[in-house]
Length: 330
Image 1 (cartoon, rainbow, N blue to C red):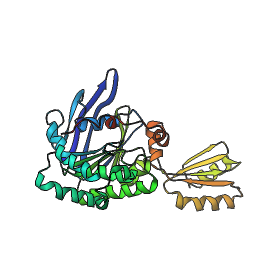
Image 2 (cartoon, rainbow, N blue to C red):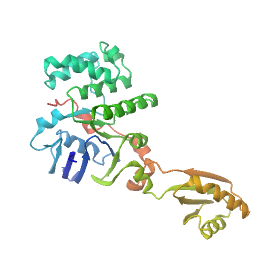
Image 3 (cartoon, helix red, strand yellow):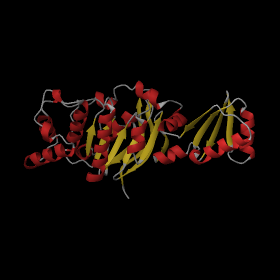
């Protein structure tokens, strides 16, 4: 299968700072591909190069078969972009925003009406098309931005923090729309996000970028398994006795004792935990409390970057692509 996006030692430097460092990857047709990384890791710079907003310092890439160095126009006709910050005009109606976008992308006049009707129906905004955006909720504006990005029938859709600032219910609805787009339009979707659950639930594969390099790339399930399994935390005064019991019985190999807690790393905690409790009770070992932790994408993020994804989310600034959103894309 030919990749929809492929990068070849793609590099971008700003003075002495290397934002993207010899990055090579392949993204296949129809994938929902997630990009995670700390602030300043190079996520938005990578997207900006793939969208031909920024020119690489060295290396190159292809998007939908077109080279980012030589075929700007063809790439921009092949992609849709939803920026991190709102980029629709609040002083216009939803319909007027879409009509303006159709003009910018030279959508044939004979097809404009049908395409606008189609994308409005897709994002369930047909009944609000004639309303000004000042009356739209945050979730409705994001849906209109997705509709706008789809108007010229792109092969690849770039979503830069598509659900940032939305309430949980609106975020769930946005996830449903993204899943529907992928299934209905056979579209390749590139997603940057600070929400670990979003990456886990939406993405076929996830790349974690740090200091401009890919430090991990795989399916979310595989990345979580790479951490070594579930963790059982048991509060106990005599941790060494329990550790010796578990290791001696062959119930677990990785058992750590620290600050009044025993941490047991296992492949499947749901199966092993009842056995641990039974063995401890039989041996007369009293356990004060039990915590069970299944690895999530935040654990993966910390493992590969040394930082907490939730902390990064809280301090996330305006993305580079969002700051460039007023550039005309043709």
